[in-house]
Amino acid sequence: MKFNSEVVLQSNHQVSEVNSALADFKVGVDNVIFSVDTQHNRLLVLLRKRKEEPFSNYWSLPGTLVRQGESLQAAAYRTLAEKIQANNLYLEQLYTFGDPGRDPREAPESFGVRYLSVSYFALLRYEEAKIIAKPALNLSWYQVKEVPQLAFDHNQILEYGYRRLRNKLEYSPVAFDVLPEEFTLNEVYQLYCTILGENFSDYSNFRSRLLKLGFLLDTGIKVCRGAGRPASLYRFDAEAFAPLKDKPLVFI
Amino acid sequence: MKFNSEVVLQSNHQVSEVNSALADFKVGVDNVIFSVDTQHNRLLVLLRKRKEEPFSNYWSLPGTLVRQGESLQAAAYRTLAEKIQANNLYLEQLYTFGDPGRDPREAPESFGVRYLSVSYFALLRYEEAKIIAKPALNLSWYQVKEVPQLAFDHNQILEYGYRRLRNKLEYSPVAFDVLPEEFTLNEVYQLYCTILGENFSDYSNFRSRLLKLGFLLDTGIKVCRGAGRPASLYRFDAEAFAPLKDKPLVFI
DNA sequence: TCAAAAGTGTTAGAATTACACCCATGT
DNA sequence: ACATGGGTGTAATTCTAACACTTTTGA
Image (cartoon, rainbow over all chains, first blue to last red; front, side):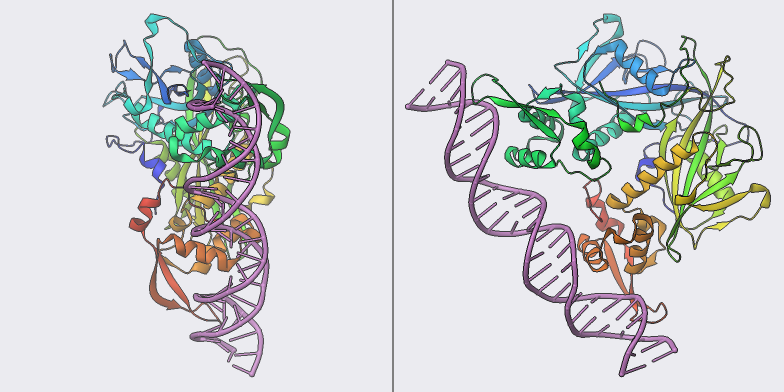
């Protein structure tokens, strides 16, 4: 019998006895909020410095506890909206971490209370992401490559979210949720480059693959970005995309 | 702003007021247990007829509440092991459903208690899956295509699990977790056929693609399955597969 | 007129598809 | 010997990767 590798992520916990009484749970939502800074070719993640126990002074993923009458996704969105403002964003549930011992507030003896974390990942563009500047919130963008040791199992959650992000980009049209209504093909390319790395594909090949898929409409409108030939503005055609849903697309 | 389609799955709930008090949760685990019957070319899912309220007499996904000191995955595995016995199985977390109102035990006024369902999906072969025969458990295999209306949001969970299963099969080696140590290539092909449908690929092409990937070892041992030329037994080589992990495989 | 950015085209090589065909066994 | 299932080979087509080249703008 084998279980899968995803599961391994949450299994490095202290071994603990299982008794047949039911566990009581507090449910939190933790967000991996990625922002793509195509200008500087950086992929960033939003972190918050904790000022409370446990893990006081550690950086952590922004999170919250779920309120009465609030859906999980609504809680995730609330956490996000309290901290940053953005018009185009993508939000999706990631994974639920709930091993006993993942939160030190679970006292070693008293198994009464467990802390469950339903994680979400969000993607938006750095240009649009305005941090709502309350210094008390202790928020900061970190380059994904340079994230320090985080509170709880948040490094694991981040790693998991990063993997999901790269996969999503390859076979689903997340990019168009994040870009504005109208965009140039080069903007799409830049987005892919900063997330997947420069050499994921040649621009001209990327371009023709994308257009061949047939769900990008050329508006005919041209825009000038500094020097160089003006670029066409495209828009995502949801109707043309619909039949491709579920099919394994490759944007590589 | 757009959220993704997965999220839509859990958003058809009654609208309810959010107040700032925290919600209390009971956490359950629900399992989508698929079994592949290659003999009869059927994909089955294990259902349990409820004998308690709510949804008494409805079929439902087998589930349980999480116990003190028990990990989510352990709870999922316990539910499974109580009901069926199998040597080779694959188990993976699916999605967490937690919208307010998904369980009728959440009284309309009292938002105190919420029922969260962390769903898991399992895959095993029908030949190996022995139902532990306690009539009181009211268990039965259903063909996925013929599942009736289920309790709670279990049809949604099943649909979601089914989608995941088909995707997993295409780009990850789940099949080899489910097959015995040694297997014939035709057994692999049959597995793919019953899950993805007859015409997903020609046998000879499937065969060469699979072998070219290089992580199947020919043991040299031949076995006869009735008439016809004897088939070679192969085994999955985890070491040879390791470098291919994360890479986008295509078993189509 | 030249550099920069947008966009098109070409070509060698790899991968995919749809088959035809040979091999080894039970009856 | 022939049906059955196992296994190999191949030719047409499509896809991919790498790169050359043309077009349109600002300076």
